[in-house]
Every structure is written in structure tokens, then in C-alpha cells.
View 1 (tube, rainbow, N blue to C red):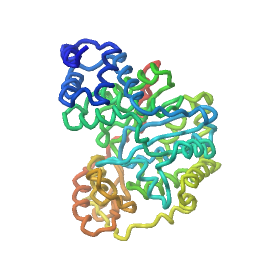
View 2: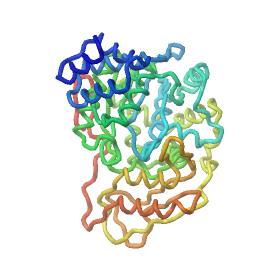
View 3: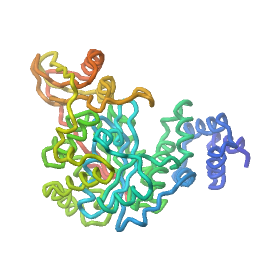
Length: 440
């Protein structure tokens, strides 16, 4: 069928066949279908949507457009995790070592940060010597020996997704659940794990702003994974408040280490234990209650911390930074943010706080921007906390003085103070599995 006919069919609300979907993915990847026709198709999908069957086929076609990782050399069950992104989200550096310490293997490809959201690869590269670009053999060896390996994405992993996402970014078609789901899940399928847990963030610092929309996206992704033979589940977690108290690359590594030492903030610890529990449950390690206990023991015994240090060593990093995170260094410039009045912090615009950290040098305004690994924000107070006028509610860290004033202004714009204490927010809203949605 001609691409023109495929566009018309979807524009008019029709359901595409497997042959039609694979034809358009292959044609666009190879360059025989031009950008203007793919743009028209993406806009048709934006307005008409796709069935679960169509989305699953699209995802599979995108996954097979390039390299497919073969993890058969790694023994046992391989478990992957994907977060839809947020501020202070260093969960991979905590959850993956916990799961590895409990007898599973995590061979994970992660991305870099852009804009207000941080990237796991950037955080790892704040560790001196740490390599996130590995050969296939190095990647598999690290996952076998340490129990986990986290790297950047392969150059030829899902090339169709790279091309289609770049087009969506400039054609107003990013906010489409079938297209978001196929983009995320194509990379997860290509990465080769047996089980996939999705951490779908919701709130002001997330792409999905409401729990309802987050559940819809999670349902679509779980259906894709299940149809493609992967045990898949999702947790809907809160991103209306930054996760933990440290935002920035080396700062988040330090907080991950503290959490693996049993000294992390309560919210970060709880979210990580919930994610680890679900990953272990997917891998068949027992009931959720038994898996939760295993995860807690992996932290209390320090076995998870040792797994993180082992991965760092295998990937060329200084493992002493895991046992002594002060070796990561401190930013030379520190600036306190003082409470503007008495009251309670009733709201934090998490995206705005992420942008404040980016303005300090912790994130990229463009893909070419260089990171200041030491830059970031230490949160002294968060939503629900009482504050007194003049007390320090946050500390800005950077290596360049000129960055402070703009970041300070953006941070203060991002918090709301009132006299009445707000209702405590939930950390994990729902679980989505093949069987359905469970509100928590």
C-alpha cells in the first residue's frame, strides 16, 4: 500500500494491518518515506490514536529496526526498569544494586538528561573514571560478574525511534500516548530483558501531569510488553515533589550511596523499596511480602552497596567514591535560599526546581551543553514542612557565581507558602499489571 493510502486510512480512524505498520517503519528508517509524509501520519495518530494491537506491532517494528541485545550469556532472570523521568530521580542507582543483591541480573541501557530532568548516565559519569560506553563483551561481563551493568544506549539501538522521535519533537506530536508508549517500549524490547518494570511518574515534574493519564500510559506499555512476551508491570509514582533531598549529578550519587547505607530520605527509600519489590516479584522471587523483606535485607546487610561498587569498578570508575562519597568533591560556590515568610511549603513546582538546578549547571539547556557535575540543589525543606522567615530552605551549589541569581529567582517562583499545613501526599499511587489496575 502507498504511504499516502496509509495516512488516509489512519486519518479517517481506520485500523492498520501489521504489513502496513511494518512497511511504514522500514520505509522511514531507510529513507524511502519522506519526513513530510511521516509527519502527516504522526499527526493522524495524534488525533485518531491506535489500538493496543497496532501499538504493539509499531513497537515491535521499531525495536527490530536496529540491533537487538542478546542477554543469553547472562545467567538467570534478567530484569529491566524504566522511569519516565523526573527531578531527583536517582532510583536506578539504588534499585538495580538491590535487585542484583537478591539474585537477579540487571543489564540496563539508560539515557542522558535534557532540560529539567536528570539522566542516569550523566550521574554515573560524575564518578571519576566511570565509563558508560562499553563494548558488548564488557557490558555482558559486568552484568554477569557484578550482577548489574548500566550503560548508554547502543548507537544502532532502535534507529526508527530516534528518527521518529526527532520528528515528533518538531511537529507537535510528542503528547500522544501510543507514540510515547511505542518509543519507550521499543527500546526496552531491544534491550533484551525478560521482565520490565515501568516507573511512570505523575505530577508537576513529570511528563504526565495527572494520575489518570499516567495510568493510561502505563496500561498501554504493559499491554505492549505482555504481547511481546515480556513480564511487564508498572508503578505510578509521585513527581509533584522532587524525590529525595539532593538534585544534581554527583549530589544524587552521594544520596544513592546514603540510601544504600540505610541513611537515605524516607520518600526516596520507600519508592526504591517499592520498585525493587515489584522487580523481584516479576522475576518470580516470591510473594510481594517476601520480596520486600529481601530488598530490605539487601540494604541492611550492605550487599546492595557492594554491588554498586562492583559495577563502578568493572566500568572503570573509582569504587572508593561509593564507600567514601566525599571523594566526589564539593562545588566551590554555595548560596542559601531563605524562607520568604513563616508558614508551610504547600506546593513545589518540581519542573521549575529542576530548571533551577539546570541553570546552576546540573543539566543541559541544549544537547551540546557541558555539565557541571558538582552543581545542584540541597533541599532543606519540602512540601508539608513548616518554615520560619529567614531560615535556609535550600542551598544552591555551582562552580560559576553568575548562575546563582537566576537559579535563586526560579527556585523561589517554584514554591508556594501558606499558613495551613497541606495534606500529606502519596508516594505510590497505583500498580498496573496484565490483570488490571490496583490503586494503592
